[in-house]
Amino acid sequence: MLSEAPDIVSSMTTTSPQGRTELLRPDGSPVRVLVVDDELSITELLSMALRYEGWQIRSAGDGTGAIQTAREFRPDAVVLDMMLPDMDGLTVLGRLRRELPEVPVLFLTAKDAVEDRIAGLTAGGDDYVTKPFSLEEVVARLRGLIRRSGAADRRSESVLVVGDLTLDEDSHEVSRAGEGIHLTATEFELLRFLMRNPRRVLSKAQILDRVWSYDFGGQANVVELYISYLRRKIDAGREPMIHTRRGAGYLIKPAAS
Amino acid sequence: MLSEAPDIVSSMTTTSPQGRTELLRPDGSPVRVLVVDDELSITELLSMALRYEGWQIRSAGDGTGAIQTAREFRPDAVVLDMMLPDMDGLTVLGRLRRELPEVPVLFLTAKDAVEDRIAGLTAGGDDYVTKPFSLEEVVARLRGLIRRSGAADRRSESVLVVGDLTLDEDSHEVSRAGEGIHLTATEFELLRFLMRNPRRVLSKAQILDRVWSYDFGGQANVVELYISYLRRKIDAGREPMIHTRRGAGYLIKPAAS
DNA sequence: CGGGAACCTGTGATTTTCCTGAGAAACGCA
DNA sequence: TGCGTTTCTCAGGAAAATCACAGGTTCCCG
Image (cartoon, rainbow over all chains, first blue to last red; front, side, top):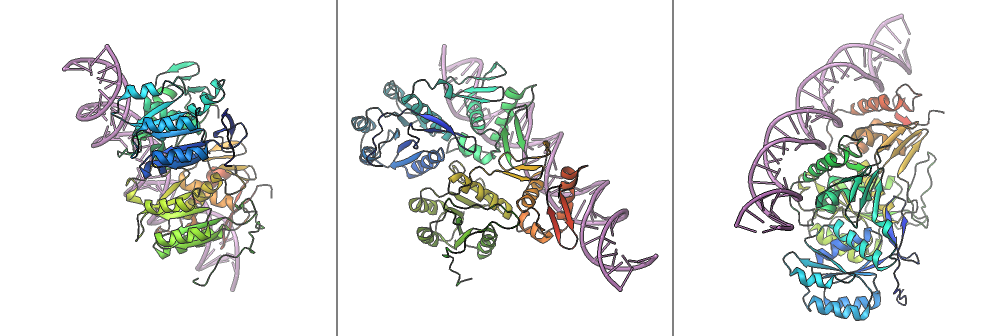
């Protein structure tokens, strides 16, 4: 394992028994992601969520540890908090690049950080999300990074389809039966989560944990509210695709069945 | 009970003559589950129910014991009460993760404490149920966790089939002879219990203990009532699958025999 | 054939769960 | 800064689910 040095990360997808799509490396082994953040709760949260994607995760709490781990773990992607105790985010990035020139990086930044500095950094293949983030957002962006860092012809993989409903993760375009639908950011994330788990009941707690930021402290009925919004836009007048399982949660499925 | 030392490997789980489906690990050995709760009545209850599933169970009454037991028992899943005497549930989780990074955890929380920041708990592979719970619920969720974690071999068994009756545990969909049937949450749980034990007589007491919450204080004839509901929906006009064994209980079996 | 026990099910009260309108607050952008 | 958009809280109402009660039915046994 240690000797494995996969600098080329063309990705392929497979479909798990549950119907969830998973990213895999060309040799069929799981994607490797390094998570770097000084807050233990964040690395724990991310590790848990990313592991659930079927990926192999290592984490580090500071820059030094990040470089060391990167050297022997040789991840396919890195999630990097820009605010580390021992060194500046840029320094970490520089050393990372020396170890792994091709690895895409997802930056975590504070909301009020100087955005143009980050914007400059992301001119390459990289990307960033602001804290507090939602797990769906992090996962989606990581998937995008990994996908793009490998095979460039993966356009089709960025489109989710359920029945006559399509959602493009790259362009954020949604349409039902060919007709374009405008969604707000939250509506989009919610729909993406539903569509990534078609025909599967998702509890309100699951949805909340996944689609809303980890620091959300509000009422659980925002989920109901946004389901209501989505229905107005997705199911309006048509045969409904979003269904309530009273006492269990919600699920999306093709209208036909 | 105290003297019990379930490190017996010789007692392989057998496929029961009734055809109950059992989860096994890839090597054929029984699944191992660690139960952590400070109330003895709860650990007893759970241990009994989970052993009935053919699983190997150990229990602990506090966080310290949980970590210790986890270290040497190396369970495939953990049931963890969030309210422990010696340490916070999240702390226990952290230490557990250090011992067993991949193990899925089913949290037990108080009903009114649902909002008390369980953030992210259902985001990873984990899940939770609120007290008071029904045993069917706990078992079902544990099965789901174990199935998805890959610790068990039969990975996609989310559909129960008895005759022309099918029940999908993921989508919560039920159909007989291809025709969809809508069930309420309780009806669904009851039918799931019956279908997980086909051709086997289940007493009203058994059903009450498994399908209803352990603190249910009502009339025992709710079981009769819900059997009646189920018959109306499942057996309506067709050859009956749900049968009464007067003085003994109920059972479900394919219509043909 | 009669009586009792076990079971079935209609009715309706209570509780739970969900939906959605209205409006306040936060946000984003010009 | 100001305006439109988005997010979210709150609360009322509707719908559904759960369950108690009680009268009716079936079955068993003497």
